[in-house]
Length: 509
Ligand code: KIV
Ligand code: ZN
Image (cartoon, rainbow, N blue to C red):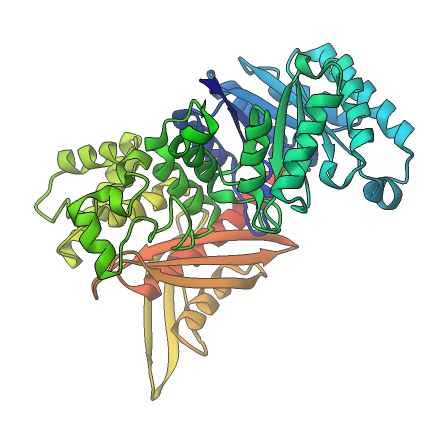
């Protein structure tokens, strides 16, 4: 069977999603998991876009040896040189050069002629080729461009050394039939197309990203660009897990394979969701909470008799853990560590000790600890951030006849104990105001969600928030059986990320 190259752009296009913000350690954590998942190419970032992106690409290029590490570059000298600087230490580096190719973009954004763009594309691919062999080129907005011009530009960049030509449906405008015809046209009309891999990059504005990508491989594309959970610019990108499972489940149609270890899908999906702060909708294909739940009596009856009646995918094949109860307060550190490794987590000794303490505290309050509880505990450890302020104590008084009041105590940057109190419109508002009185960093709360991790009155409550400061969004996550404590933790998490990012910027300047 022929293989389709899986190019993951969670750390580049995925991170472009409004409200996603990942620090270096989190990007590295995701990159390591993508490596375990078996993706062929990791697009680690767009080094020219920010010093943070540059550093993250350098780090991933240094740390990961197996996959190809790709850096995105717009078609200009500085961006290409910067991309090379960032990936040059990778075992398998790639530079991905892009430039707009549709008349809409040329006329309204770049204000350049087709000939000028063609020359820039050719020259910049040649510049990248001076640095390395593996060069990818994308004519942006290809699906709204004149196909004849796309053929021309692709022929030119392949002559200049491009080894992969990627066809983006940048605004998610194409339909499967149309997009398949575009790929077929490229295969038929670009004379030197056999010298490059044809790749596709589809956005989901019309909900067609996966369908368009699959149609493209059906007609002959051999690389798919996609993201975990389909996150990305606007409505997102084609979802990796959906594409991979469609290729696997419908091998009868596609007769194609990938190098993905599908049992790592669920774990990767959870990690990306936890670290980006984007929850997964329950009905999301492959990884949603309801994806393998059967509600109707007829369906349940069928599945009990033979799973194949209503299940086209075995949940175990995508690594969904069983919902069986696993641990209780009698479980020791060894059992806890074992379960973590079964779930795919390897923590440092220090992080393991902290997580185990958290587990013990939780087991005192909650009789039955499920895999989801454990995932929630671990998510705290994974949201790596050096705390400037640590939440030491939070207490609220509220009710229908009292003014919500909160007292908080934080441990400050020099280990000092800092306490304050505030009134609010509700208990969470009071807690946040009391914290603000101590930390004193202006910001706006833009999102607040609370959800329970498992069923039952003693469930862990998970709070996810987003705050904005000077136009930048920071996410915060907190979990506890007490949702006020979870809210306080989430706010401290977001504030500490804000403070760490500001400290980093000061360091850079
Ligand atoms: O959507 C797009 O066109 C892109 C390119 C940079 C490939 O993300
Ligand atoms: Zn894109």
